[in-house]
Amino acid sequence: MQILKIILIVVDFIICIALTILAMVQSKEDAGLSSTITGSSTNNFFEKNKGRTKEGMQKRWTIILGIAFVIVTIALSIIYIA
Image (tube, rainbow, N blue to C red; front, side):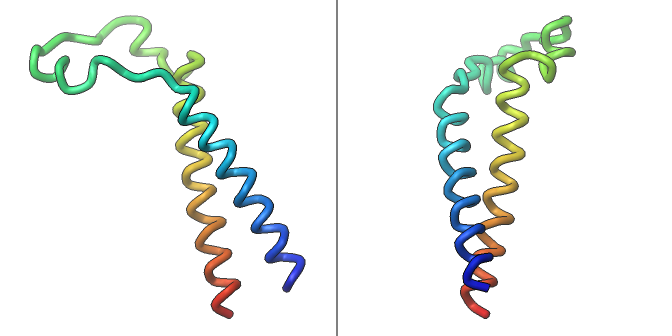
């Protein structure tokens, strides 16, 4: 059980560092609420294929790592309680 705790702590730490780096590298989306108010249309080729771009991949990996961080942290809390 002690080995599992150490492995989960190391994995949690690696995910935390990777998540922090990804969040800092991402560019800020300027469209935000102003495009909603002004009604600008974003129905173009770039918006349709945004998931294939570098920014889209960074956003996807940030979400994946965020979910993994939550799962590993919950697993750690369960192990420490038991």
